[in-house]
Length: 247
Image (tube, rainbow, N blue to C red; front, side):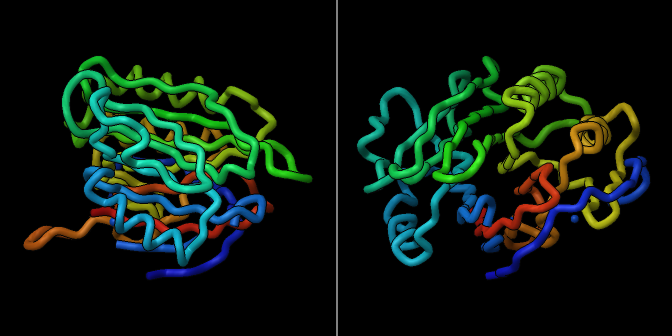
């Protein structure tokens, strides 16, 4: 487990296509604590999650790969004292995203969308913490893909649309974006300028977003560990306390 506080300062670096890097990490945004989890089936991890939050007591929980569907009632994955927002995969199995927000924090859903082909999901909420400005939070999941998948233009359009909503609200984006070819220490990708990874780096720079995870978040036996789960903010003066974990 990694624990640290930071201030997000955007590096003035233009992405270029020349170089290439999920477990548990804790980082406080608006003095809120956040857990980010790739569950690989939320129903199978709900008991583990309940144990975790009993100790961590997070204000926000962002989940990717929930594997929920219309046949799964929200009551089966509910958490006491949390409001659940979810966007299930509609074009297949697996995937899906969810956000839990402490019930004592006023919140509402801004936007949610899933790819008809079942290749990505996006869920956005707005929080209105007491004595603070609104906070916009997004949770996204995108499947592993080729360097420029057919779904990329619509996924990127969805990111831009949600990011531009409530433009003055501080933004926190979490999720599994599946970009193992990006080296986050220098903002470089091994892929070409026509790749999704390169365009994603351009989106981050154009949107003044900073990525705060710097250690691999996905580990599999006999595979190279990779950094897939990201934490993005565009604020320069807010600190964030976050746990990330990839199953």
